Length: 234
Image 1 (cartoon, rainbow, N blue to C red):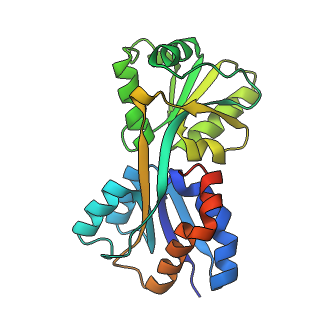
Image 2 (image 1 turned 60 degrees about the horizontal axis):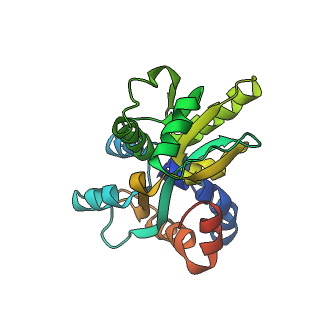
């Protein structure tokens, strides 16, 4: 039996990884998963990359269903994911509960790690926050962008191991929780909150629609709710 191909936003990487062994036990099938910024995953699908299950934002899922790339009626919401602030585990946790506190924390950071500001949900939003705080130009020298949030958090941890201090990250909470060595400080202040619904659906090109539907059921069913919460979904 050939693997089930997954294209997914990075927000769902922890969840899929946590449940892939259970899926193999229950369905006798492995997963071939690719994770990245939602815009890149959409581009990959449109370019013809193998894909049975697509996990993207609810908005993109609805768009791709309407345009014929996803099977109508196959979509299932996995939950909401907020964007948060991270530090290296064990490092001081700055106050970020208000716009003023967030602004001060960003200005004090020696390096700010975040995902792709063009293709990533959290990266696009973070740049908007910087502009609203009037910090985009001022902090240009401290900004470190990466292909996705998990890569950004891993790079922050690696730079911390090299002795860099005062580092701060901003990405979706699921990616912070997924990355060893990082610690969630808090979600962004309510004024800047981003809570994104992620949805899984079967592609119209899938030759394994039944297995794909089985994976989506596992990811979203009631008895895996605790796993979703542990991975950062609400």
